[in-house]
Image (cartoon, rainbow, N blue to C red):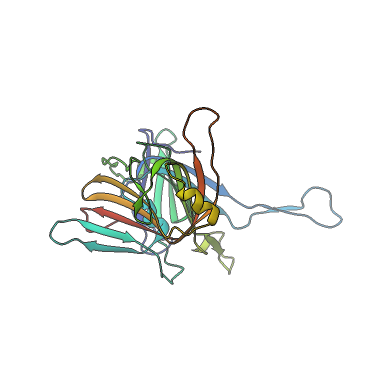
Length: 316
């Protein structure tokens, strides 16, 4: 069952103080949300020597509860939930705040934020409460010029509580326009990319491990342990020069790649890959007829941070 953004559906969330403990949802999650839940019971077929060809028993193991949420990025929340550690800095005298989401140097592997999420549909008279949600993989994507920035969050949850539609959280939807792709947003090493950007995908993976209860008292996850983080960006570019193609041939380190989105002077979102940015694979696509030369390229990135500028002192 996929819950979409119809007038008879609802999605709301709040950050949890403690992993897996209910936090009353008070906020919308981006715009144009489509949520696809999944449950896997991991039923095992137990067979016995000397028995028939059919299983002797069917036994349920640790149940996996997950969902994928597609949402247009309005306030940067999906990025923060995937990266952890927010630093808020107020700029002097202007009422503008800079929120830096940068997990670099963060040694506590258990510190990834968890959240409670509720979704449901009036026609089905259903509301599902997901507890202990954590972002396993975040994929940011833009499909072309003047298109909204999309976040796809693949999440793992500890527990699902079925509710009725009347028990839903009453949360207002976003009224702010999502960030959208336009010109001069892509930079390499603090320099505007010389050419056009067709499409791009930026992926951060937390490699979450679902840890069961060792005592075997429940089939719920005891906790989720973040593993080694990885960062990757795939772009289709239309370059005006050969520099990036030669960087791919020579695997030349680009040091930094950034995408900046500006709704207003003090309302911006910047995604920065830094530390080391190395071209991993790609090639030139020459058209058979008159047309642009494309450069699809995949970059492996050492670290990711996000910088959000707005008028709110608190990010969440």
